[in-house]
Image (cartoon, rainbow, N blue to C red; front, side, top):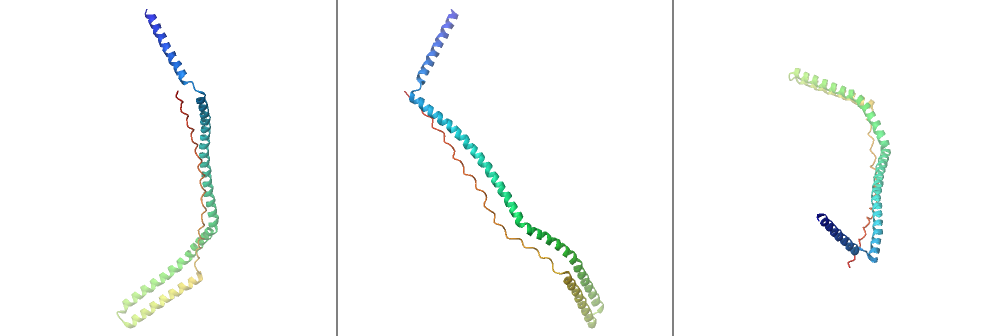
Length: 202
């Protein structure tokens, strides 16, 4: 009896499921119009997906192209600037070499003058200290100091004349006008997804 009851329930359940499936099948059977709309939408969806892939590809391609253009722009500008400034930089390096040599020769001349001036000052101070206010000796001290200072300056000027003028620093050329940077590629138009057709109600 129990087995028969279970079988009866199973048959009843199977019947109900079959009835439900039949009802759903009956309700969802598309009409010719619905089938046509669905087919059109499917084609549109396929085209949209393909267009979306192309759109994404275009974005990456544009990004790569712009990056390459910017790198070339920077490299070209650097090369142009280096070529433009090369003569000035060479002249500047030569000037620095000449200046170092000039300073090396000028230093002992300047030092000799300072030594002579310091000696003249020291002798003058010693002379007035021993003069004890004697006018004649003070006058002699002043005269001796002026002579020593004059001699030191004359020797210094003569040495400078022999040394010659200091090298002249080259003038930096005018700034170049930097060219305009590459323009970003236009953003591609993103495809619009198709509108899914609504189900026709009976």
